[in-house]
Length: 235
Picture 1 (cartoon, rainbow, N blue to C red):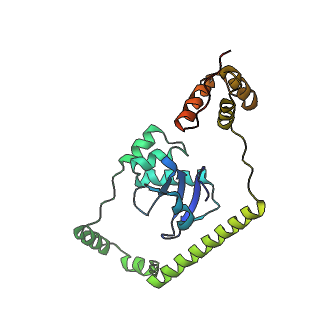
Picture 2 (picture 1 turned 30 degrees about the vertical axis):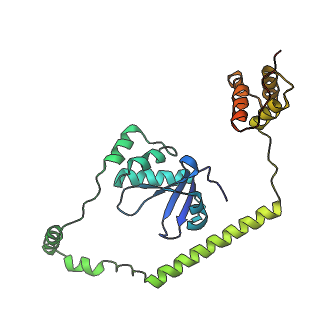
Picture 3 (picture 1 turned 90 degrees about the vertical axis):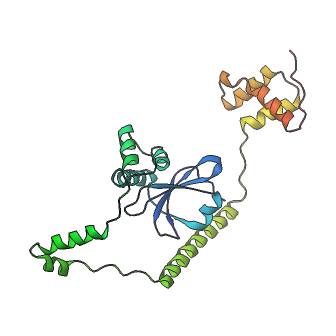
């Protein structure tokens, strides 16, 4: 399963809307979404949702973040969504205040609609304008929506299968050693003093002196994990 470490522009296979997926707290995914005329929103989803509900698009995340910013300045944004958005595009304090203070559009009442009709009726050329108006887009039937959803899911499954085949052909990836594993290895060996352990790890991984306390921290962590590391050696 692929982890999201950088923002990705995708299409939601259920709504057919473009969305921006970002990494969120505790390994979850943050989903920035917009619907025509509504405020920018943020949903938090588990990692499994990424595998089954979206189709990646070849669109620059930063460019799409700018689109969401312009949308939010016009239609508004929930505060949490605006905070996530400003991680990926420049949003000034004034713009943040503006997009989070935009009121939700109120639905027109019947009286408002009646007044608009009467106003238009008094204008010249109203009949011609009505005739020239483009016809409304036909609403999809439930069967058409389901067929489109299934087609998008099939594309997503095909893409996932291709990724799995590619990973299988590449073989298992060799894990690179980390500073943490090296600290633990030298601590468990018990042959070096704490200063010498840090010197070895600093030489291999380019650490600075601010990480010198890591030796004691990892020894304590090993004790908590029940691995019984040897005590620190005296000089």
